[in-house]
Structure formats: structure tokens, C-alpha cells
Image (cartoon, rainbow, N blue to C red; front, side, top):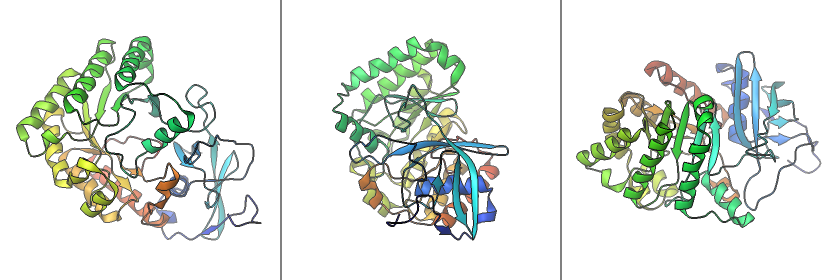
Length: 371
């Protein structure tokens, strides 16, 4: 925000696609893309090294309520005053009801952060026992977690200790899993020892089932090297997950175009092609069933047509796409351009919802969701 500009002044936006969605969606997508500017000094967030301060917001309207987590950006055209989110759209000041969401147990400071155990959406819980990931993609949300741990000087413990803590949590909170959650994600940073990774996923799934949990157990991981080009190994690996109690297999494509993958993804994972994902997902649908396989793609990190092609292709296979809006978590990620404007993001949102309707896809409404 330029020096001397009033804190609550509005930067005009002109949107050709404003009327294609309800105004609450315009604000939700805009805040995910550009963050929010505070018009109040009543909200204070901790400063943690290179982590971009983030806030959880609930946007409401008639028959509409969605929670998002967005970065604080004092250049954003979207202004939050504690009760409303405001913007100047096509020459008129518009606003939606909006309030900060503070979880006193998980995030008492009001700043959303990731961790070993967390809720990540409505009736959805995550176990993240591999705190770090072997691949460290440039866009990864876990960069925020790593920076917080470094700044705080927190000892993360060994992966084994983290895993044991997650198993203990299942035992101690069995009632919570019966009553609070429809989905439990085993959504961790991947390790290079694929046998150990498989063993931990299977043990966690069995622990949840033995505790009486009957709802969805979703594994999310990088595709192990042994599965590439080997149909028999894929069936063996995926069947082992299913028989342990896993009900859905997920692996994030994230980026479709090969040149963008090579630029943003590192190590072995950068060489996994979109066609490799198609092969694995085809077999995963055979093992787990239609709509029991999923993948995340990032809207805004590559040209829209590539993302939409990826979404449509996997939807045709019976895979559930769960695209998210690309957003920066640490300072260096702000150097990754969002490759289209808010009009373009609205268009991608509308076209993805058309794919949802065409293939009758279930929708996961997370805090970064494109849908």
C-alpha cells in the first residue's frame, strides 16, 4: 500500500467475470489469490522469520459459508475490518460478511499453521508424521512449517517418534474420530524408503480401524519409484494399502506441464510425468473404486488450459480432483508468479464446477479449494 494511503481505502478492480459467480465466491477467490489487507489494528499475528502471516476467515452469505486461510498482504485490493471483507468491484464498493476464525486449541494466536496433527476442513483431520519431505517443491505449504520450526528452535523428534505420537493420539481420542470426522488424511511429507512409508501408512490405517473408526481413511503421498512402469507392482502396493483399511489413494499431480514441473519440482518427483500419474490412477481406480482415488492440482501456477486438461483427464478416469488455489506461504514463494488475474481464476473456478457437474464428482471444501 503506498505511503499515505488510508488503511481502509479500496483499490478498484474491473472484472469481466464478476456476474458469473455469486459475490461471496469473488471475494473468496480474490482473497485466496491476493491475500487480505487489514483495516484494523485489533488483529495481531506473530512474526516468524520468512513465514507470511496468515489468517483464517469465514465468509458468509445466504446459503453460503466457506472457511479460507489467506496471507496478510497490505497491497491487496480486499480489505478486512474484522466483520466485513470489502473491495471496489466494477466501480462499486461491495462487501461480504466475514469474520476471523480462531481455534483456541490448535492456533490460539489466530494464525493458521500446519503441524503434526490438525483439522484441515469441515469434519476432516490430518496426521502428518513425516514432518519434512524428501522433495521440497518450490510451492509446498510445508515450507511454512519448516520455517516456523527453525525460528522457534523446536526439536521435531525423529520420524519414528512423530509416528508413535500419532498412534497414541488415535488411542487417546477414539471418541473424537467416531463423532467429529468423516475423513482422516494420512497426508505426510514423502520419504525415500518406500517400504517404511508403506508400513507406516498401513499401521496407522489399522490403528484407526481397530479404534472403531468406520469413515474415510485417505492416504496422500508421492508415487513411489517402483510403481512407475510396473503394473503388477502398482496393484500389489495399492492392494496392500486397501487391505490395511485405507479407503482412498491420493497423489498430488500439482503441476501438469513438463517444463513447469522441471522448474518447480525437485529430485525424482520432477521426472514423474502426467502420463505416469494417469497409469497409476487407472490402476488405483481398479483397486479402490471410482471416486476413491484423488489428486490435487494447483490453480494459478501454470496456464489455465493445462490445469483444466489435467482436471478433466483424471475426472474421466474416475479420480476425484481436489484443486487448490496457489498461494505463497513464505517470502521466497512470492517470486512464483500467479499466471492469470482474478478474472482468469473466476473462469477456471466456473469451468471446474462444470467438470464437477458433468462427472458428478464429490467436492472437498478445504481452506484453499478452487471449488
